Length: 349
Image (cartoon, rainbow, N blue to C red; front, side, top):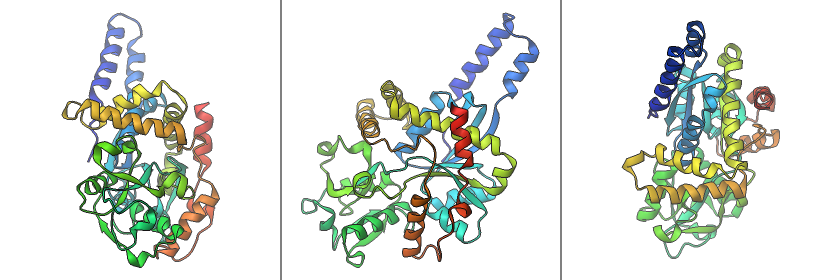
């Protein structure tokens, strides 16, 4: 779905500029420049409460406009569709998305690069509402809710189970959808367990679920890199400066939410707006947002230097090879261009 444009903010900016023009505070040429300074860019991202909240935070804080960018933001629930949007030209850059499918696409010939990191460690854990499931080892013989088979939620569960020594042949994976869909299936007990986001960590009693011992991805699978930003080679070549500006805007959001205590109120407001404002219960939204904000403070998941290391990229490719998504591991230089991230950090100052 397409997130609605922040029309109120834009109308306010236009109104303010018009008022200043009427009172002679800047000239007509300056007003014309003010209208045309922002450069349009189409940004795609994954779905999920964490992603849409951060997208709304970036907008509400005006970071994209600060770097001269006028965004059109699209959220997509399927990694294949994200890559398709980039390849078709429907999007210029993808941020806040798993990239295992990106690596596989590059290995198969897609001319694109991973250009930055986002949430490096996972803001999720494995949950269950079943009384007999308390640890990851109890998942043997159970039904696990994930997203599309081969996509991130499926792959990260495979990686965790393998690390913990749980026989993959003993479990059954079911495609439920996004992590939010998986969470609802866990609460409804239509699946035995599955991965869900950190915004429920302080709401376990309310939903009558538990986080499984050995199932916190940040602590139990820290080597798995959760999200990245990526773009087509042709867009990098033609609009490199624009992509650097986009990365700088998101980098400022990572700094803000991860290092500034004052970001809590802004984060809660962003979640409230992202989830529909008046169509949701504010107290419930605020409680979940506060839980996720505290998780970010405690675990520092975002890449403040906007980079993903060669070791992390290599690990993700080895996972792809293990599950048959890739035939071989490519060099770091073949799949990434971290020079844009470096330039974005310099632009942020």
